[in-house]
Image 1 (cartoon, helix red, strand yellow):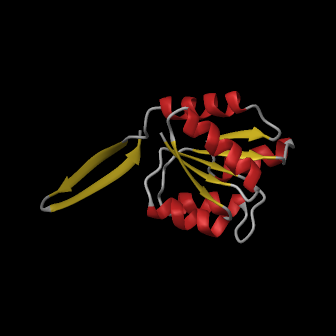
Image 2 (cartoon, helix red, strand yellow):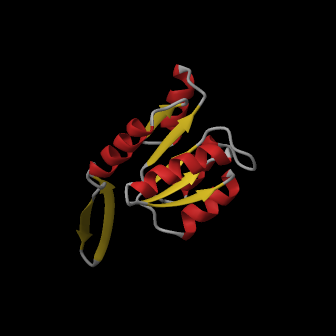
Length: 141
C-alpha cells in the first residue's frame, strides 16, 4: 500500500510512517497542506492520511481541493478536532473516514485496510442518439 501522510507534527508523522513501513507499506510524508496537495496530484497513492490543522492550507481546504482535482484516492482525516461538527465537516469535505487523536496505531492501520477493501466507484455510460447526434453521459453507479 502506498500512503501519503499530510501531517505537520513530525513526531506523529514519523510514528505513522514507521508503523506503516514495518507492515511493508510505502509511506510518503508532506509537512503542510500546500505540499500535500502538490504531492497528491503528482503521485499515485492508495490512501491518504490528512490532519485537519495544517499550515499553508488547512485540511478541509486540502481535501476539497484534492476532490475538485478529480482525485478519488480514499482519504482518512486524523485530527485532534473531535467534535461531531468537526467530524461531519471533514466527511462532507470529501474524506472517507475520520479518526480522532490520540489514536491507536492498530486502529489507524485497520481503518486504512478497510478503506482499501471498498470497491472503486464505477461510472455508467449512457449513450443517447437522435439521427446523427450522439451524446455520452457518465454517472457514478
